[in-house]
Length: 401
Image (cartoon, rainbow, N blue to C red; front, side, top):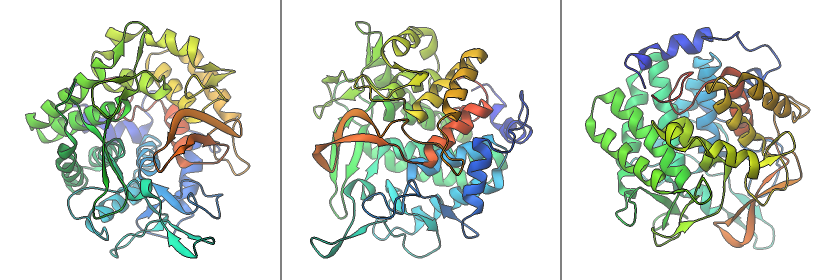
């Protein structure tokens, strides 16, 4: 990030620097309507508002809310974005068990106050008891990095040090996921309930990309070179995942922390170019890889399992193309994204009933992890980022220098 850019983020976000303000009916207006419909004060948006039962009902995933907060800043809605940022800070201070600087992957959606935060959970008819999802109760390092990015974006947009301080607390916890095996980097995090969640020893290219961006931004905000060093560790891992044989990034490593997982995932290809200095110059050929191996109809799918267009991922590519000044291609993708609107103006996660990822569920290794034809705020947030040309990794309308 260029010197002085952080101080100018608020002005750029509020004025829509370089493009017209988003019109009503856009992803920005949908996000604004979604949060305005909530009770006053700090709030977490439901990740799948149409779900009325089961594991996804009333769940508010930290990632969805973090990217929504960043997108709201990009839309010029800083006050509304603060409501999510304030909820993240309350979650840091009012967990029912943890008081060490971590957040969980998900909480119960709705108004957030000073009481210990609830997890969504559901009543299981078969066992006749209340259940909670082990993933939502756990903590992925990448999700914590997105929370850091959201808080640092809010700090830049208004100069409120409480957001910076919250990001610093998250960063200190994340140092506990540092790993010396193989190419270094940071592990996946923890899965399951307190008091002894399972340490996830695999490492993710996507997570380390997020961490490199978040640590780097924190280092620039605080002037502390320690965080720049941590950013370099994460970035080194990402670069080590590059495979010249496939002109792509491996998705990460196996549990041994060394063996590369060759699964091809769209975000693991796109995000390093958006987030990390020098990656675009070194690995621009990956743009050809995603066009030849992950293109699906008028958009992009998650992985080589295909299945259908992944709307959030298609928006991620649109953001990157816009930052590369390939406006015609970005406009075409935005048109494809806008063809996947829900009746109330949201955006489907998948254009088909399911889009497979190639992964299995961490809570049930026999079940595939897929994106459904449902309406998450994460998809709308990335659509808003595509509409505004806002890079969530740099907090502005530019690629990293």
